Amino acid sequence: MTHAPIVDLSVHHKPADLSDRIAFGFTKLLRFCADTFFAKRYGHRAIVLETVAAVPGMVGATINHLKCLRRMCDDQGWIRTLMEEAENERMHLMTFIEVAKPTLFERLVILGVQWVFYLAFFALYLISAKTAHRVVGYFEEEAVISYTLYLKEIDEGRSPNLPAPAIARHYWKLPADAMLRDVVLVVRADEAHHRDVNHGFANELAGQPAATALAPYPEHASDIRMAA
Ligand SMILES: [Fe+2]
Ligand SMILES: [Fe+2]
Image (cartoon, helix red, strand yellow):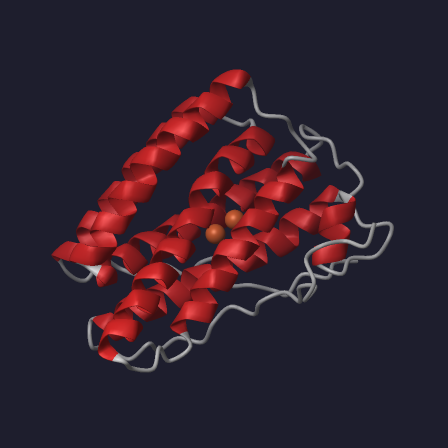
């Protein structure tokens, strides 16, 4: 039995202008690097990429917060949404760290990538918030694909379907007998939701209707810290 909402895996924002094409090209370049580096080591891939995925929400929240202070205007709910996204991505990381352990080399990659990516994304957001959200929308499209491939690895017996880590059972309110497969399903649903939120934000910033319904967001524990 699965507790994950059903999500549309085929959603793709067709690049509509130069900014979209840059965002899409950049995402595909990073996808190629990730595929080359990790191949099918999905647990390790998830850990390293989730340390990156948790950055944009916090950058977007910070910059919007500062903008709203300067302009003394309402944020239309963006700041909380982006902070929640960052927290959610960090919970993905805390979950997968229970499943795989990063190598020393991967830890060094994480350190280097965080410096470069944080600064680069911050600069991009200042220059073009629309492109920044489009980049995240495309990242999340790729995340949905990667977790779908991870599910295939589990279903075809190439990756073990371990019991779900306790932190994941708590955060996604999963039953005691939940397995890793159930966790990957809810993580993928989170990514699909972020995908639609960020493409929607990019649309809004481009003066288009945010449009499309959001992929349903799984239910999360309001208190992310587990009782001792
Ligand atoms: Fe994630
Ligand atoms: Fe994500």
